Length: 297
Image 1 (cartoon, rainbow, N blue to C red):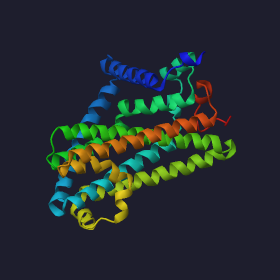
Image 2 (cartoon, rainbow, N blue to C red):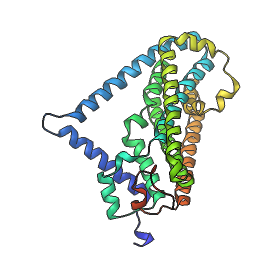
Image 3 (cartoon, helix red, strand yellow):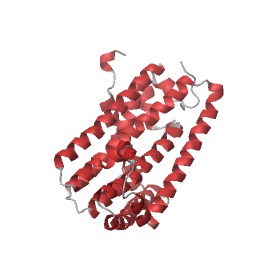
Image 4 (spheres, rainbow, N blue to C red):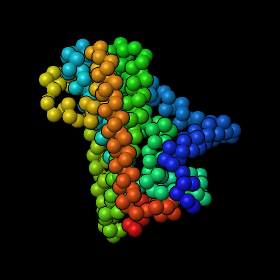
């Protein structure tokens, strides 16, 4: 197949989005005794609403306890912990659950490069992965509500969540490719076990921070009255910077902070694509197997 006829990453991402949304819609419309997609959708909506309510209540205590700098620091700690836990969990997986899916069958008929596949899936994940793309949105929405920001801030929260999800997906895929390309197959299982252990520790830390925030938000706020200087250089500070600027009445700074966040996501995207090209897997037949078991080429 000629290079001009190859599928671009944006086109592939659009195909993924349409396919996944259509599959989800068909699941909701299915007739029969088993209505698992409906149950999952309802549970997801209810959980998200409850999450917004719980964090709004906790963040209100933080707002009443410390000044705006302390509030931003507390929000940065929560957002950074969520982002790291999501990245660790995604990096430890090998994407094996997609083997045999409709996406795979399509790409077997029309192979694409691994770089295009990585970019397309990462972009599509930001739209169709509610456990990833929206994992930050309830927290950011709750903060916007407590700060009494305009509805435009809700769109900013959506843009932040999408940018973070793209960056996390790209960094996770790059980590998987580095493991497959640089580690011998005989030792690869040990590396995956180490990554899964790190993911478990990250999720345990996330659980501890979440419990701390929801149960004793005032204690967290008092510890961040004077935020450590290094906190402003963490990913969590980058994530909450646009909303924090809006809370200070600085829309231009908010747009600049959102632009920096999307620039970082674009850098992660191009970096993951460069690693995929370097890995040497140019076709879907090579990339279709679980990356944890595929030998480097």
